[in-house]
Length: 242
Length: 311
Image 1 (cartoon, rainbow over the protein chains, first blue to last red):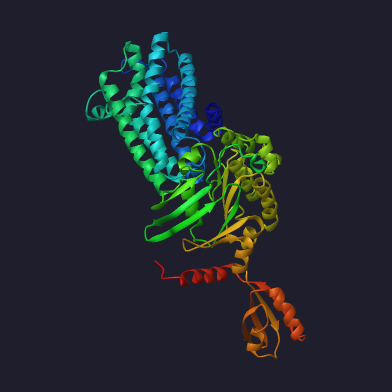
Image 2 (spheres, helix red, strand yellow):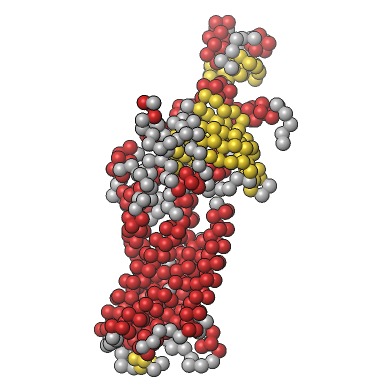
């Protein structure tokens, strides 16, 4: 079995789906150009606005990119394709890891494009800072990838579009991806328990020269573990019924 | 053994289902089904909708867990046989996924099998070469069916399971389709297909297994099953003779009168027709009909439950 070949087709399918490409790349890009361009000399929350907004938009776009594998899973379940794949030698873990990998690749594309626009708007970071920021983003996306798989097995292909849009929008908003949060108060305390908050903070953390605080790692780990447990439960229930 | 040259894998043991049962809530979908299929055999699973054919197939393929009983595919569990790439299936659902061409989709499935057939050869056999570059979303019903057959075949499996493969096809495409399947069956693969057309089962299977209400009610060579299930009826306008005289004609099992017409149920309609015309040359408007399959199933079901009380 040639897994790399299977993955290649999975990636091909992901990138031919223009709708997801529009949501994960198009919308954040337009917002960044319009809002970031207009406020390129401002600063916010202690850092330059273009950098703040670049991480916000990247967090939002990549979040959609990795969650969107759920949409593909839901559509394949609905079409009976999941059953078809279950009678081939393809292990379930390869099926899922290919979905996650293609989601991450789409996220990678968003990152590259939005970084390029950021540089155009005056964002200047050292190589170490770029790497730290990108590394934290990629780690912070893990719970979203698992969440996508769970939603894919929970919802139908009709309802998953709005559900994914809603979930990512709420998490992006509360996490501060669209604009700054209050610097203190209940909302901020709530936000700190969301993985999206730490995605958005990746840029600020990188500028500070350190990694995430311990709190961030705990939040991301807890969300990952809880999503995994729920995803396994939903997957088992779903396949047992088939 | 020359006859087994083609088979690369050890297919010893064939397919064995023993005392397989499965219920969905109060519905007893499959009840104590026993079935053994020898390697290389082509078997039709014949039955009306709701007979338990698909549930039996799901359990064979490891898609559903039996409540009781066991499945052995060439001496392995369904999961192990599937994982080893020895199984190819065409399920009732499973429409080709989007954003790929036909060739790409077949190649994608080929990539997950350990020893697939060349994609071009599969497309030639299944008649999909002409639509190789077409998007999977732009296929007619018949084309989609061929693509699904190609997906079942491309892994070069030892066992090919086809669940109502010609459902929704017109008569002509159905015929073409079976010609292809027959070519594949001739290459030494074990083939099980479900259908509710007696003609299909008769024409393309070595053996027919009849299911009704979750049970196997008949199992044998197609000639034998056809004699049981494929009873014919002669209809004729014939005002004169009394019913006992008609029923006494060789080949006739029972006679009924409907006004001027008579209805003769036949075990051997050919013999009965010859004798009918010899004895009653004035018989006219003669029709010979195959008994409806639904009626035949009812008859077989009734016959199978006469042996003892239904559990």
